[in-house]
Image (cartoon, rainbow, N blue to C red; front, side):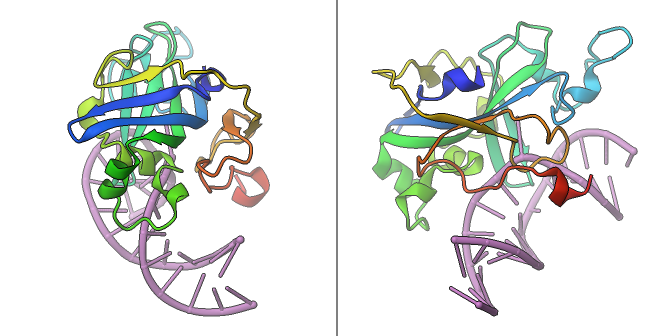
Amino acid sequence: MARDLIGRYLVREHEEGLLVGKIVETEAYTQDDPAFHGWRLVDRATGTIRPKGRGYDLFAAPGTAYVYFNYGMYWLLNVVTEPEGVGGAVLIRGVEPIEGIDVMRARRPNVRRLSDLTNGPGKLAMAFDIDGSFHGTNLTLPPLYFTEGSPRERLPVATSPRIGITRGVDLHWRFYVEGNPFVSPGKPARLDLKLR
DNA sequence: ACGAGGATGCTCT
DNA sequence: GAGCATCCTCGTG
C-alpha cells in the first residue's frame, strides 16, 4: 500500500479552497514491526490485541485516518491499511502541491522555498490544515480523501530505511519519488550511527 | 550545505 | 524522567 499510494492525490476540501497534493513519499508500518505504535498491544502468545493505550486505532478498518501528535507540536497523517483487527498503516511524509498553493502559503507564512511547504509529514499537515479532528475519519470520503491521481504516471520509486526511528531500522519500508523536491530532507535511520 | 539545540506535550518505564 | 514516525533557527564552512 505504501508503494501504491505514491503518485496518488491527497485531497482536502478546505473552506478557503480545494487543496490537492501528489504523494511523493510514504512509510509502511505493520504489527510485526517494533517501530509500530501498536506493537506492544499485540499479545505474541495468544495473537490477541490488548484494547488499551496509544495505537489501538491502528487496528481499525482499512481507509481510516490515524492522526498522531508528535513531539508535542506536530500532527502526522497515517492511513490504516490492514483488515479490521490486524495492525498496519502508511505514513504520508511528502506531497507535491497540485492545487491550492496560495492557501498553503498563507498557512505557512515563514516558508521561503516552495519545496519547504510540504516536504515533510508535519509540514504537509500544517499546509493542509490537518489535525487531530481528522483522527478516525474515513479517508475515502470528503473532506479529506485520496484519489487515483489522473493520469497515473510511471514514477521512479526508490526505497530506504525509515526516517526518525530507532527500531526496525533494517526494514527498507520508506518509498519516495527519486529526485522530487517535495521528498522530505530527513536522513534514513542507520544502525551504525544510532548504536542500538 | 550541514549540524546542533530548543520547543513542546503525551506515553511509557 | 526518558523518549518520541519533527520543524525551525542559528552557527560554521
